[in-house]
Length: 294
Ligand code: R5P
Image 1 (cartoon, rainbow, N blue to C red):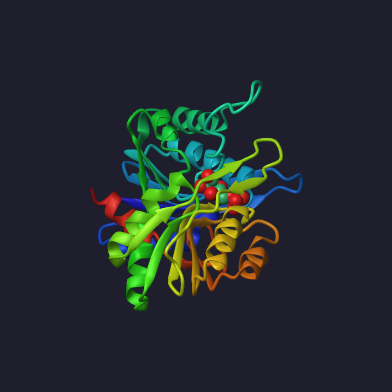
Image 2: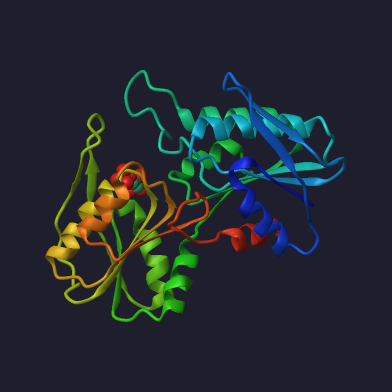
């Protein structure tokens, strides 16, 4: 097996290769032409190898995706045995349906390009806490979605946190809060959130939670503008919660979201290395390795 880290996931790729006993690591060189077009080159021989590409798709989704497409095409010509593609954060996954007439099915477009480029060599797509599991269906049974929530559970268990409660900031995130709560042996609940499709404005229903003087972990898949987390923090603060920890597999943290989340009263923001920034405190490398060894 040969691990090929793409430009957007080089460190994660090295971590994965180091954890695997029987894998080598290859190099992809890359640059951008003066007019903005992408260029990649596979520097190692991958003939007859099971190749694993690791390339996240944030920040700069379009650039990362274009690099990924070029990498797949370049590898295909080098006659590997198979191609596995790890996309830690799957861009465009929130456009998993046509919310309004005239919109594209963006997640399906990305999936089709990946499948068509990989052809018969395509072995598996591995991704993490994808916004909608429906996207996996575009890969005809060859896509795996891994939850990073167990890593958050272990992170907090190791921190020795006590007197704790887990909260999902919207109903769809309930299994995420439950996974962490099960590891910590604590209670969990969820809030009900709606988002205006045109303005993006979030409304979260106030709900009585038993959190007075309790530490709370809020768990979600993505933090984008931070609006979802800010609403949840406000509700918790009004009910006397103690320290509030904000967890998301993909902490995109757009614009001033970090500022807004801390200003609302968060004690910490914890993300993974599906996207890299100062909140990437947990590595998903061990979970990628477990999947590759199956
Ligand atoms: C949406 O349902 C997702 O699970 C997240 O809650 C959402 O993407 C977060 O976005 P924002 O940070 O902009 O509120």
